[in-house]
Length: 277
Image (cartoon, rainbow, N blue to C red; front, top):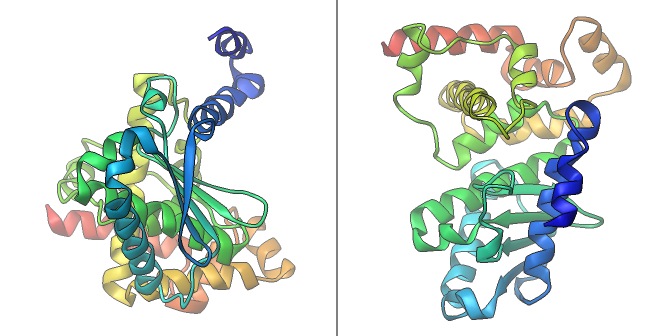
């Protein structure tokens, strides 16, 4: 708690931005002190606290293995990158922990997916969260970390089957504002410590879900994985040209796979919302 108070004292802006990182490291440390690690298959491990979920470890391992394979299959990947899926300690499920529905982060030589313990009580929600976070790992690996946050979330929302059917109407009626690519990317960096910031981030996830849904319906889910691979192969000159136009490597990658650039995708997403009203 003393360290947490010190981190809070960093304040806002660039310094305060480290608070979320501190909190996620602390949540993982609370788990790692007493955790058990189990190999589910080569390159896929499960980490958990035996005294909290040990009796369900076999079932959780099955959920993780099947959900991970499904995410890879739907995105058109033949194999998963090395993964460690961690069920965090119960005490880490607290207001001071960011990304309370789970998160994925690259480590040296593998990707780590962290999930809150409360998800274990709802198998459907747990499997959805695993697919969502494994989709992040697949995109991060294939794109080399160069995919825009809004597009990475678009992919993960689709693979997690998390898109709210009420969302298009909220945009179409003006209840929620439809953001352009730059503002949507910025929305994911909002301060999640405040209710206003959390609401902005929530709407950003939902708009990304609309964009991912439009792509998947028109071109198939495997195209989403191919876009990630194309981003990873986008050369310097193509990326530079895209950035000079206010976009990123996702623009030439989308054009190559789908024939749509980023701006066309956002227009089609907005049109789809209007059609669902």
